Structure formats: structure tokens, C-alpha cells
Amino acid sequence: MRSQTLESVRSTIVLLTLATLALAATSASAELTPWNQEQVTAIAGELHEKTRDLRDTLRRQPAPTLGQPGKRAFFRLRDELGSIDSSARRLHSALAAGEGRDETFPTYRRMILSVRNAARELRRMDLGEPANGRIQAAADVLRRLRPYYEEEPPL
View (cartoon, rainbow, N blue to C red):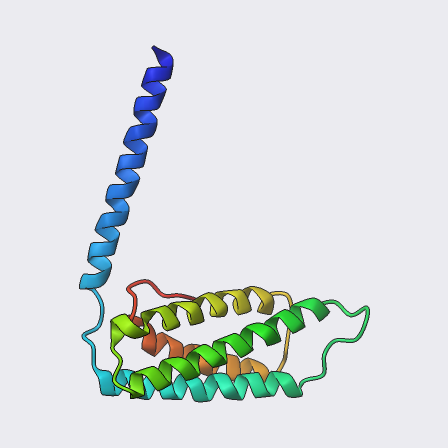
């Protein structure tokens, strides 16, 4: 008897969770900023420019030497920034070619996943200026692009 009750509670929790996710997905699409191809393309171009500057800045920075903390994190961050820059370039090119929200969302999403990974690596180190300023500049542009693709902030 008790196992049936427990199973019933589990089923109810699963159903409530699925219903909540469905409602969240519906409200997310209703809250998106109306699509403006020209504006989104311009923002994506600016984002690509900022991510390229950030990637180049990090490449010029000396890597931590053997025994210094953060050496692995530095190289993981550099790799993630390459992925972010590549995604930003693809996103901008696709938007400039006339592709819309649905066609470019996978590229945007891949970029956001790389941004989250890079943010995790950044917590392990202090890059100092000018890298921190360039990180902030790229994040500011990304915040302007976000409402066209998703309701919740990615960062």
C-alpha cells in the first residue's frame, strides 16, 4: 500500500514538473522581443567584433607558467573563447544572409553554452585589464542580443 502511495506521489511530481516546463516554454516564446532582422544582425556583428577583440587580447596575454595556479583554466578559457568567437562569426554571417530566429537559434544556443563554460573558467582566475574590460564589453552586447532569442538571461 505504501509503495503505491509513493509511486502515486512520484507520478504527480513528474506530471507537475512537465506541466511547469510546458508553461515556461509557452511563456518564454510569448515574451521574446519582436524580431528585427536589421537590428539583430547589427548587434550580432558588434558581438563578433567584441569577441574577436577579447580572443585576441587573451592570445597576447602570457600563459601562467608551470606551477602557477590557473594554468589549465587559462587554456580552457582560451579554447572556449575560440568557440565563442567562431559562433559569433557564424551567427552574424547567417543573420546577414537573411536567416531568422529559428534558423540561427542553434548557433546562438551553442555560443551561450560556451559563454557559460568560459564564465566558469573565469571564476578561477584574474586576467586583469584590458581583458576584464573586453569581457565586460562582450557581455554588454550579448545582453542586448539575448531578448531576441530567450526570455531568461544566459549569464
